[in-house]
Length: 528
Image (cartoon, rainbow, N blue to C red):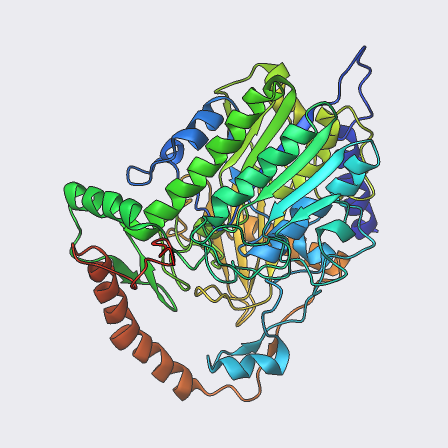
């Protein structure tokens, strides 16, 4: 009975805020530009506190938008987060709980990580039963366009199979095959010129779409492969950021040891700096095109990231401090993301809200702002943020959930998380222990207050477990072949070898004579 009451209450709350279609006279449906950056950390922008990376176009966009300072991605890794944006559902509900391609079950042993658990299985493609935001808009006359990273299934589950009329570059790959400079290997994006930059090419394809459809109503989803690994840039941009790091003072050490892997503590990676700036340049190209085509005043612009910045694992590219962790981690650095929404007609440029929001809210919000009927049966885990955008309050303290029954490549552990009323509880599946944090005062996730607030922790934990049961969440299982001695040897090797190697590589790329390869990732083109 309690379970039924909880479900009815939650549905009632969501229905209340996802109110019926507004009665507006002579309303013109807005265009929508949705910009999704891959692996961009919350503090990787000038507007959010970085003094190293330069992002003038995104900073300008943020100042023209409402900034949600407690905006969250729906997952700590890419595929689940992207599925949640498109479906309006939390990851445990739609079933894509890890990046598509990650090993599960006994297959995890081939990674030779010697972990205690075998990761849970997960859905390997965006479910066809779900009506995506693209399909919902297309039903209402929008011309729909996708460019860039997809990573939500292969042939039969590409963007064009989920509501997008046009697909430029969206395939099953989670990173750019062939790198960020042409020639690349993408059947949905033919090569044109040697050395062409992928990020700018995707922006130019988006501009072409906007120019051709400026007299109709469009939904353009620009999903950069940047700033995901491999991190690459031109020699010129590397040198700019290498010199900037030098002028700011190069720290003697760049890493500390987290629980599993070393983690970057400083933003001074000159290659990543160039990659971020190029992405910002590409954003500028598209924003200028809105103005040039006369559609800026009737185009909603959304800007966000799919998870936190990569501070451990992959290319150890950035630091998310003062937030703890990064992509793949269960803490704030893994899930907090830039979250900006520009609605020109609302005249709320430069406004901010600290109300906790999450990527599942984009779906109902965009429908609401477009004066379209909401699909409450689809975007079950999102609410319309229109009241906030209109300067009003949303007076509910709904729970937010994250479920990741896997091990992250970056050092994260199998956990489930509930956040509500300013409290965040993390449940660890290896041994069942829990951590409790009070936000924002302990948002760095270094002050676990569970012993001081055991009653709050018990209530949150109970609600989390009930919700996981309601959505039929999948869980990791114990590995009967777990060898503690092998696990300890692996960790010692990480401390003694990996950490040293990272520090050396960091200083190498900050040296004046650094050269990654002969042609700087194909940016120096030889004319034959």
